[in-house]
Image 1: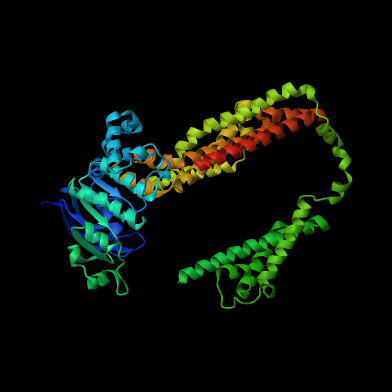
Image 2: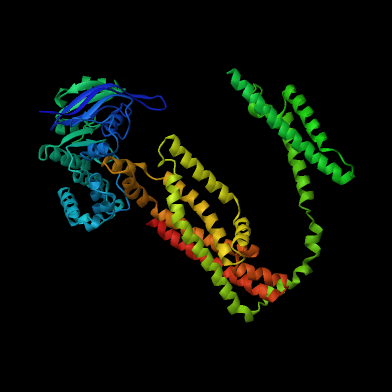
Length: 255
Length: 334
């Protein structure tokens, strides 16, 4: 399998002096479901945001689908970003627009300004958006304002928005951290399905080891901006877990 | 470290200098007006300098207290020199203010009968000029409406460039931000009444001058309100839309505008409300409408006409206030 992500010696130092990433080397193969573990502040979010240049890295190399992300600008950056779907902890939908319009925004990287303003006039786009909503089981909510949906439903709209991009890669930044355990699992199920059925590569930061074992094909653990563990989720025992999360940590089981 | 110390001593020096010059200036004004002797202004500066140097080196002055921290901070303020100097300056300010404003309670309580004309006018408004007044009133309301309408698109566009979170962190981006913000603040600090004087010379006395005056003022204040609204948006959707590969303009349209549209409308309606009120005042200095009519009738001492106009203005302001509050309430829920 080909590498879809190649990261070499990546550093990120924030303007205030925080050294968030300290020389990350990471390769991710096509079709992997890669889980990022680590405490809050360990650099997971920064790493994910460097991959689509929402954050500029300080030094190092990032290649995605054989394209250089670090130096990409303008149209090049746009082309790279549109093949990377992104899911956020806070869903980051536009709350006073309908679910359908939110899904349609996933297409923005492909269309002109004029086209995007007249989105609802483009039948083919609308049909694809409806299909994507159907896939996450929310077709009946298409015309509802997003702020009237529950957390789990909002995250599924966000997944449909990512699907609209027709991405090769999905970055998920703690997608279930603000959901209850049952909803969390159902959202993870959709991500798992995209990974298996659609062969999308998924990189997902999580806090729950049980979910990591269930869905992940590989685990990468970060601590203070460095990779401290890389391997199969099954290899993480109590000792490894405490290395990652600190000595006082205890695993919380969710089913 | 040493630089800091020098800086704080310089700050303390100028604070003290300002303090003493102000205090001696006040004394000078009081002495000159009470005793009718003519002390020179140079006296103020010399006295100020001497006091500054003396009390600063003595280490007990106000500037010293503010800018140069000392160990003895737990002394009660009323046992300190700086504490008493604040009391003295407040007292002197009050006395000077009383004199400058020509406060005279005696007049207030004994000369009520002078206002008899206008009072009887208010309670016996002249309904014969109702139609004429309503025409002038319509002029005022419409000039306020047009001023608001013209201001909206201009302020809308400007507000994007006056929002710190949207402007790129480059020299050009910063310059655009600073320039628009400064001009908006400057234009807003010039009262609409001053703009009305300028425009009544420019385009002649009448509602058009009033409209231009309110428009300039509205653009300035709406730009500020709008851009502050943009600075307060949820950045999550902006990040998410950026991540889809959207262009900057698409990010503005899909992630920024939907978040600000209802507060924008609320501000705009509030602005119209303010403009109707200001339109009356602006009329006084040549801005046309009901304000101009009020001025004319007042100068002719036709108190019954003035009475009617006052009632009409009050009614309009009251209705505008009520409806705009209701509409804004609805918009916030949206």
